Length: 112
Image (cartoon, rainbow, N blue to C red):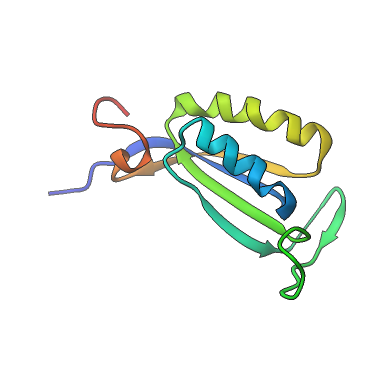
């Protein structure tokens, strides 16, 4: 018996650590079933290079916050992130993904 895949959306947000609570509070308000935080990452963008420093505070480092949600939660998340990105540097990516256990992501049976 094969595993059935269900279409969902993955949202990745890359922001300075000081904005983590803004993003996670938003995800909690829209009832995303969960999220993963990857801290102390490096990268290069419009504001130049940001290096990860293991001795610096998480407020100063970049973080990736990712979640997988049903499509109907994408627009509220995008709208909620707009004020953050209007004032601060950051990146948001939205991708199509397929999951095997849709009930883990806030979608109980029915159509994906």
